[in-house]
Length: 458
Image (cartoon, one colour):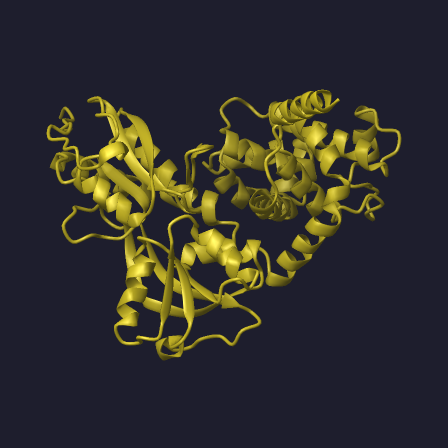
């Protein structure tokens, strides 16, 4: 049946400057917001679990997707009601007067405090406490309900800070507490290991898509059919794993150790990692995350198997990449980055970018020969060799005799490669939160501007 979507006919002017241009008949307009789950960012684009899920829907419908970043949850609901978009994909719960999709996740509110403070176990303990929250969020609404019973509760609603910003404030002890959803806390606790979850406020709620009143009922029906389909074929599980599967790998002690060395040791090698990014196109923070996983940023590190240096290079790899001293940090970083880039580029075009990097990291650990052997095993088991989600289950089989005995590459430590790649992912996430991206063009412009200013002063 030919899919028909009602394009909005009644666009009113109540949204003022926020009014989005009317969508074309083949364009799906999707509201999102700035958050770890949706990650709407007007500067760098919109990426994240919710955003990717919504783009997948648009692709399924044969439409282009236009993501629009709203201020907060209240703004999302307002803009849906006034016809700014077709649907919202931003970790939303059901709203009384708007249609919603079937649930695809569940979420609950967590009160977050600093580990140095006494954990709160009951709602009554919020008396005389100050809790920061994102303005217009359902967490603010939950606190407003609590305040009806506990008048001395002080609520500070911020319109400029995200959930991660508020958790950073608690970690730095600028704020007493914050209320966020549990997915945000799971991510934020890796960035700020000083945090603790003190209290659940309210009951778990289903996460859904919300639809504008004027959209055709067929869009809601097709959206539900899409969600059912990707639940059945495993694509939903793969997407959840891509964005959330690695967030609980580190213990608080692991995070503390990493952040301490990030502040004390990483500055010595930051320029070398950035230079490696310029040569390879791989973000310097990912290269730094890989180096930490390999050596904890110890340029003199040596393993029992003979790999050495900051990037833990074998003698053969070092020779092939022109390294004459594996213990020299700059040589090691340059060669390690080049090696990872070569592994990335050696993978077939059928591998997507996100999966490509994870597979390249696994190959960095165990070699391309073993990775290709694992990809062969995946095919014999009807698993997708281009999917990191599926290869995570296949790689450990390289250590089983019934598999490696038939392979030219022999036994491999595939399970170790999975752990390594997953750890690099979370270290990279932490670095992305604490360290700015490196843009060589920006640096050149800044240098040029400083020279011009110096010339003027002369």
